[in-house]
Amino acid sequence: MDKKTVLLASACTLLMMSCSNDAELIKVAETTGLQTKAFVGEADFQIVDYAGDKCIQFKNDSVFNAMLWEMNDMSEEEINNIFSGAGFVSQWQLMQEADQEQELIVDNYEKDLSQPWPAHKIKEFKQKYDDVFMFEPYDSTDFIAHYKLKGSTYSPFVNRQGLFLIGDSVVYTAVYESLEEYFGLGISLYGSNGATTESDMNCAEIKYQIPGGDYVKARAIPKFTGSRMISNQEYRVVSCEILSQKKKVMWKKHHADVYLDYRVKGSGVGFGVTNPNNGQFLSCNDQPLKLKYAAYGKNTIDLGICGKNAYSPLWILNGTLEIQADDIPFKGYSSILLREG
Image 1 (tube, rainbow, N blue to C red):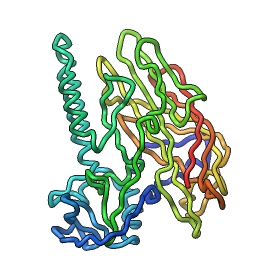
Image 2 (image 1 turned 180 degrees about the vertical axis):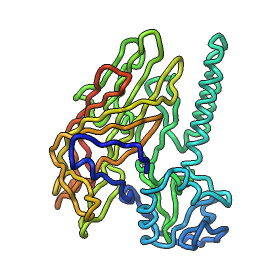
Image 3 (image 1 turned 60 degrees about the vertical axis):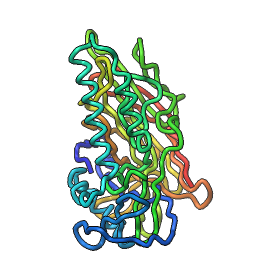
């Protein structure tokens, strides 16, 4: 959905497209007895009451999948406008509120560093959003909110309880089961500069203190975020969450050009992208790939798709990842090993 991605160095990477993210869902069919309260756009989806909260109900699977496809070419604001109204509050809206509140706490404190540390405000902020978001476990000065949802693509139509409806079926979105699953083991965030190494798994991170100035940090977390069907074959979508922050006394959003170098192998037919000319799979398996991204705060981008095994685990992605930023003079490294199914 974000158009700031610039892909380099491989014809393969020039063909990357956003994909429908519907495989990280666990569907639980049950009779809902819905009462329709308001329509959003056409009658294909609407806002309804369920379990004491407003939620989005899609008419059927076809409508849901078509909406995911259309969302690929829309901004987050455009998507939010489609689903907002009639008292429905999405996780995307909650994240915008949380980001503003977090920045306000940081900005107010940095105006006068002689005032007491805002420990109570930070505690209240985390408690307010603890049921829906998660926070960096290794550094008390970093309390930026992160989605518990594994597929943040769903955030504009998922309510605070983490669900939406397709027909009369309740759909619970998959979430991270632990902080370590998302944040990894982290790097040293105090004192000397730090970077992850290839012994770190599924998280490449770098932190640097600009001489005489702020700390800056960049992080990349690869993950499976959904599925895509091509010629009746199912592929997993491979995404990467990119974070760019700076810190005077507390971490906040930061503009930076982030560079990723990665080389991965996928299960089945391997790792690749969807060819926009014919919609078919184009292999980039075990090829060196480069990506440049103009990051600001938290960002999610699609890297490609991964083939499917005929045996368990159905989807595997392994390889290496390097991260660098334009204001950090060294790289961070990570091994990649994703398994699912």
